[in-house]
Image 1: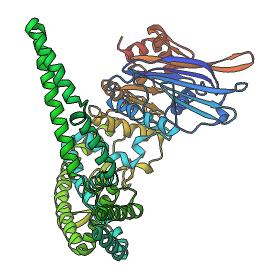
Image 2: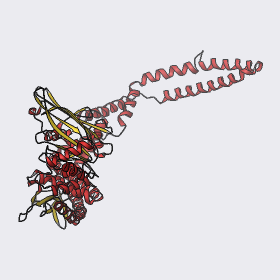
Image 3: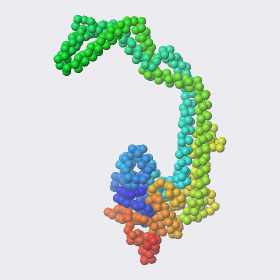
Image 4: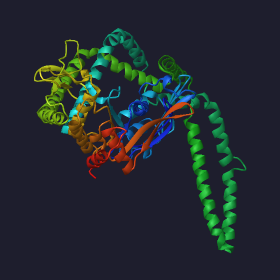
Length: 567
C-alpha cells in the first residue's frame, strides 16, 4: 500500500506531500490543475523515463519519494534480500532528476539502478491510462493472469521440476558434444601422457615414504655413530647412566627402611631403570639394523627423480599428477566410448521429453478448461462498464520445434518448444464494436477503454492478484454518468482487495471514495503552483456538487452529491 507520496520541484509542483489511505482514493480537479503531473511523478517511482524538462524552473533537481507498506509483500521482501537491500515493514523509493541530466535512484536509502526501481515497481503498482507502465499491454503477463485465477501452483511446480531434469541432461549432452572433437584430437597426446605416468607407476604416499628412507640412508653413518655413543653412555662406560641410577636406587632402598615416605621414590627409580633398559635395547637394535647401502640409495634417488619429472610436467605435486592421471583416463574412456555415451544420454533425454510433455499437457488443459469462465466473466463485466458488445478471447498457441531445435518436449508425438510456463503462449484478444474482429489487446488504442478492460479483468482476478496498488487515470473517458456509476461500483468492489487511486471527472465515481483529494493551482510570486488537499466530508460534498453543476453550486447539486455519497 502507498502510504505517502512526496513531490518537490516537479513541473508545476513546488512541494506536495500526500498521505493515501486504504480502499478507494479519488483525485479530482480542473483540467490543467496538475492531476496528470501527480500521476507522472508516481510513474517515476516505477522506473519510467525522466526528462530534465519536468524540473521546476529555477530548481536544480526534482525529487519524488514514495513510502509503501510492504509488511505482507513476500515478493518484495525476497527481491530486497536477493539484492542485499535493508528490509523493513516500510519501503522507501526515491528518485532524483538533476538539471545536469543525472538520475539517482534509492530503495530504503540504498543507491540502486533504474532497472532495480522498475523491478520493485512491477511488484507494487499497476498504472492504467495513457502511460507506458501497463501490465495488460504486456502480452507476457497474460498467462500469469490466467494462472493466478485458476491456481496452477502445484502444476507449475511439477512442470518446473520435470523441465529442470530435462535441461540438466540437455546441458550435459551439449557439453559432451562440444568436447567430442577436442577429445578426439587430444586422445593421442593423452594416451602418451598416461603411458608416461604409468611407466613410473607412482603410488599414493610413496613419495613421502621414499623421502623418509632417503633421509635415513643419506645419514646412515651418522645414525650409527650417534646411536652407539648414546648406548655406551647409557650402559657401557665407567660412569654409565644405568649404573649411576642403580646406585641411587640402592640408596633410596636404604632410606625407605628408615622413612617409609621414600618407598614411592624407590618405585619411581625402578621405573626409570626399566625405561633406560628399553631405550638402551632400542638403540642397540636400531644400530644393528642400519646398513650402508649405496646401491639402494641411488635407486631411491632415481625413483624420486622420476617423480620430480612427473611433477614438473603435470602440476607441481604428486597430488596434481594423480588428479591429472584420473582426468585423462576419463577423457580417454569418453573418447573410446563416445558413441555409447551419446546414445545413453539421448535415451535419457527422450524419456524426459515425453515425461515433461505429459506434465505440460496437463497444465495446458487446465488453463484451457478454465478459460471460458474468465472470458464470460470479463465480457459480463465489460457490459456493465458500458462496453456492451465486447468479445473477449483468450487464445492459446504453442510453437512447434524445427529440425535445429533442441529445447523441446514431446506432446502427443509432436515436438513443441517450452518455456518457464510450459508450452502455452497466451494472448488476450478483444473486439469492443459490433462487426469488428477481435484483435490483440495490446493494439487497443483508447486509454479510457484499456482502463475499463483492465478494470473488468481485475474484477475477475481481484482475489488472486498480488499487486497491492492499482492506479486508474482517465478511466471515465467517453462514458456517461449511468455507466460511470457502474464503473464506480466496480472500483469500489475492487478496493476491497486492493488500494485504488483513481483520477476522475465523474461525480458518480467520486461519490464512492473512501478518501478524496482535490488538485488545484494558484499564482504565487507571479508563478503557477499546483497543490493537493485531502477533503473532509463537507469539502467532499462541495467538490462533488461542483463536478455536477460547475462553479455555481446549487442546493440541488448539494443534495445530489449527498445522494451519490450515500448520505
